[in-house]
Image (cartoon, rainbow, N blue to C red; front, top):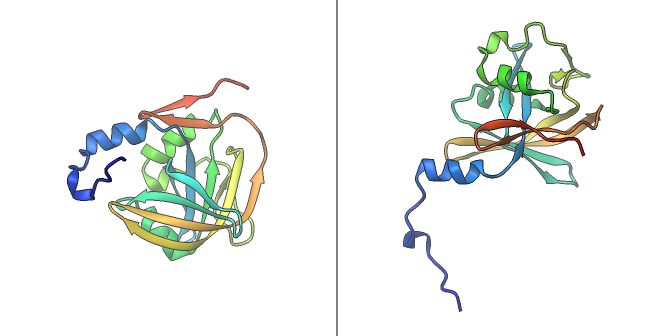
Length: 170
């Protein structure tokens, strides 16, 4: 019979070890968007997952230093723009460009009181904030799906071991 280890029996992995392990899991790449004082706001996020079908819930995780942690609870809505294989420039723009410039020259819109939808993203999910939970150095945001739009079925842009990758066509 295997011995069950208590949490105190093992030292925690170092941040570098944890990053290496978590970075080995391939994730999709999204741009999470919301509004701040009527202006669009967004950030590249790879920590995204489906939570529930009924009700339709998803989650995104944001570093507590990310200004989106204040923007989304204040606004109450956010959007998840799932990037396709041609989304490398968008992923970099929303990761590295200063916030006021991220939407400059970008085609985007919104339906009703929803979040900014980036036209170049093949998939968009509009969400109402359902719950926000602080977990370590991140804020876990659970969104209730309000509307989806799937425009194309191109392969997704993926993130693996600190780099963006395009998948080969099926």
